[in-house]
Image (cartoon, rainbow, N blue to C red; front, top):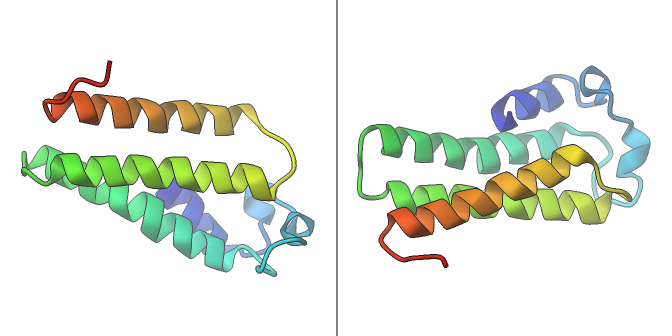
Length: 114
């Protein structure tokens, strides 16, 4: 999702392809969605893509990358919720997903979360 959304924001910085209004960026340092698209693609999508690669190759670094991807997903979503007034069900789903990623990664690493 982050890769696809990031690419769409880079290609269409006006946000039209994702039904986003540039008026929503009024209280941000951005005039369009190109920079947020790059950040979404590289930070959230890239790190989670690396985590997937390391998980598939059973690399020992997979837990670190998965945890980093979860923290970035949580951070991205929380910042988005603070910048844009209002909360959507999709943001709540991403928060739940990020939290599950953190807890499962912590547990699989050998440390019990609960």
